[in-house]
Length: 169
Image (cartoon, rainbow, N blue to C red):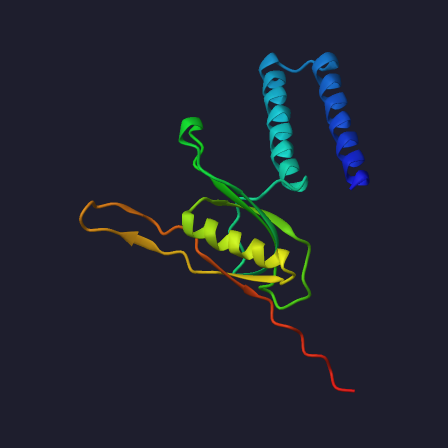
């Protein structure tokens, strides 16, 4: 990871040096110079957004259908702070039928059902049971009385990881 940080810093310094050379010594029209400054600034913004994902910040991507739970942090809603609540789940994707990859942090919206299921899974983990998570399908709903259309809150079922059968001698 340190090598990639060094390479990113070197690339940024190189781009900044080239921009300074163009701005100081070229005879381009001022509009081209200004557009070049905006272009490089936009490139830095895109790089920063990618850097957030590379640092290990939780992703807003959808949880995998099947995953191994490593841990979770539950932030309950706080109406006085206008915080709607979040549940952070640290999981390893088990969907692709390959050896488990690296764990990833996922950010999910808060719901009472997900809170209780996650808390129960964490209690089971404290008792030494590995937890397998299975995400239920997300559905669109429409109620006829209020005309409200939205998504059903994310529901995850946690179960104990089945014990592995050892091969016969």
